[in-house]
Amino acid sequence: MTSLKPFEKTLKNIRKTGKVAYGFKESLSSSNLSKLIICSSTVTTENITLLEEKCKQNSIPFITTDQNSIGLSKILGLNYRISVFSIIDADESDLNLILSKL
Image (cartoon, rainbow, N blue to C red; front, side, top):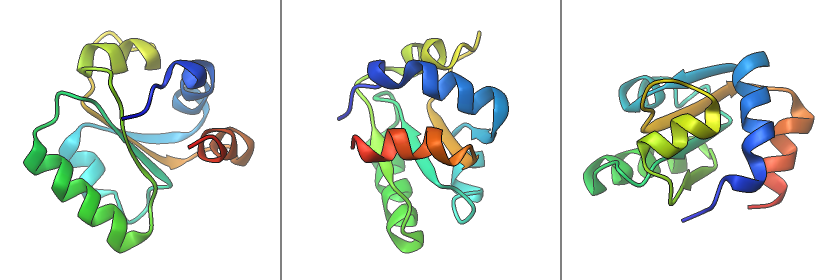
């Protein structure tokens, strides 16, 4: 599990300026376009396994975080729960900042 605290500002920027998908189903269906998928601690083991397999097939980085869905939504600056967050398009410098520290 990864802490997202050092990346809060970057993730908020990606959410505002990039293209993202929220939720398990949306992230799973757009996984072939994704550059990174972040999963909260409240997702079931079965769904995490499914996302991990899909990410491995498409060579996409996958992060499970110690944040629950409420914590993940707060990091992203949203007013509703987010269990899975998929980055489809983002500024390369923002994305590289996150990926370089994993």
